[in-house]
Amino acid sequence: MSFLELFLLAVGLSMDAFAVSICEGLSMKKLDVKRAGILALFFGGFQAGMPVIGYLLGKNFQQYITSVDHWIAFVLLAIIGGNMIREALGEEDEKKEDKKFNLKYVTVLAVATSIDALAVGITFAFLKVQIVAAVALIGITTFVISFVGVKIGNVFGTKYKSKAELFGGTILIIIGLKILVEHLGLIG
Image 1 (spheres, rainbow, N blue to C red):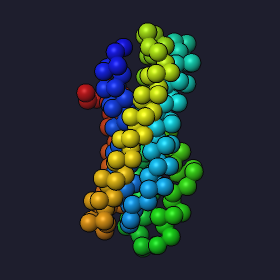
Image 2: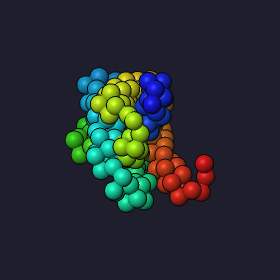
Image 3: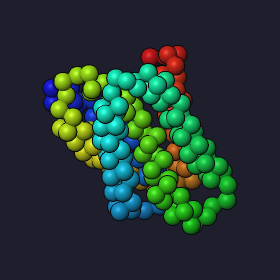
Image 4: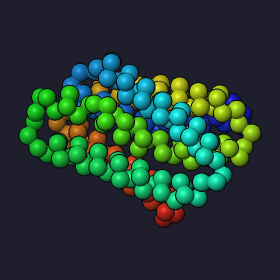
């Protein structure tokens, strides 16, 4: 694969992380650069790590992984999105933002948005791809795009914060459904 092809692949893989990052930015009252950096680091790290795992699993397990990856992503995103909607419709709590953003929460988001990268890693095993360069490019691209996504979401969230969490939860559920429907072959 050429550099341009790998870059376009990296951008494509980072789009779910970008959408989730926007949702996270929507829920922030004020841009928290540390929080945005942690989120971007997790998203970039998992987007880089999953292809490595997929590459190592390779051909032997491809049929098992690709048969359930869409279900895993759907369930994780639906749970997170559902919680965001429940919180948006519930009473406002100032501490809610800090409680929600923890290691477990960020890890679940990172896994949910990087499942497709696992399948890409499996395909890397069959192609002549320099795996280190490829995953570095995927990780860096996702980091940058995710950080920018948090900022974009925060700009809109401060203007429309009453509906931001409801919107963000709905988007996560839609992303999960999109992943599921595409993998089931119902569209696309």
